[in-house]
Length: 214
Image 1: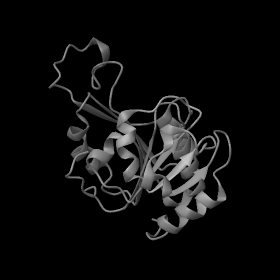
Image 2: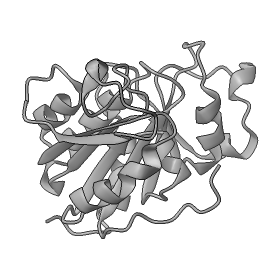
Image 3: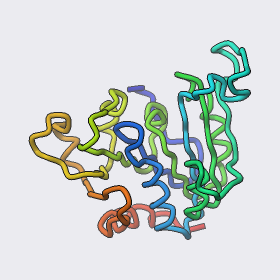
Image 4: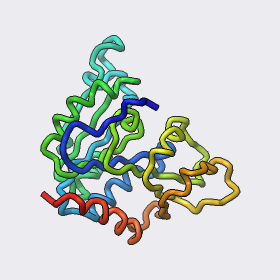
């Protein structure tokens, strides 16, 4: 874990959402939070640190070197719900951004991302890799004991989480979730497709309300 984690260089509330692996419901949680707090005029960000195209700027036809075209930031125009960033707009976000970076190049994108967020009063970013560099106002991790996958990078973030959202019940005997002090933190159960738990909504409200709505 990078030792130089700092608050992001913009003013406003920043909520980061990470998870143990892909397909664990991180984007779903982001959309649920946006929908639960519509008056916060969210700027929502999806960070993809490993674009399948190879080049985040020009796509698969680009023969750029690893040093060129390290990232791309795109404003999401659609509310169709056909992509994660469009789901954020459909849920009520004021603005949605999609950030693609080459492997190990997320840090290159952060100054430009900070500029995009400069006027945002409330931002929510779906990313695990972000935690190596920025210290958000709140970091929530999504975990699912029924899913056998668990990324090593996600394990590194467990101690940084302020709260956990579980997609399935936790069995005390599951050795993958014996995280010591980390698992004594606040946790909530929300299976995929279920409404945001009232207790989680109250938890977020108490933190989010420290900043006024824009």
